[in-house]
Length: 110
Length: 117
Image (cartoon, rainbow over all chains, first blue to last red; front, side):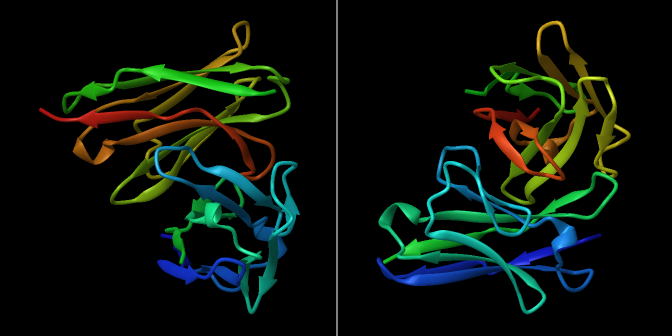
């Protein structure tokens, strides 16, 4: 059973910078896992932010950036806004159509 | 502008079959995989399976024995059937478009399905 692990919760001040990470139980995350990031607010479906490690969708603000960091996928928010308070999920591709979501990080802007 | 609109029964009894349908408006129906994902309190987000316009399917191995996803290309819609449901299948079910290896860029609004006797 493949497990994808994220920080359960993080807190950041408005205007600050925060990095969320995404680890795989199978080992180091590489670009071959095509890491993706989603944002979800209460009562809404997830919204795609980042695909294939570091590519933004047209609607993704430039303050969101994706990368690989220390064997994990990472999502960095720079200049955090109050509206960025949400749950963030990563997703990794394991081949053969298998994809696994992380457990999510609840980001509080305080 | 791509929109996904989903519908189906929201309350089921144990052992019944869950049936949901998702209609796709705007954009091309071919060239993508059309996906079902669920979200429960206990297990978070879980990929259920997918189908393309040609009817080729992939399923989560943990649900494969109970899941069927079908497509109606004449109406640009796809459907999910999950048999023999239990309380563990209680979740919000989403349909979504998969551009590439899990790049779910457009989502339906979600349907809460509750399994209770």
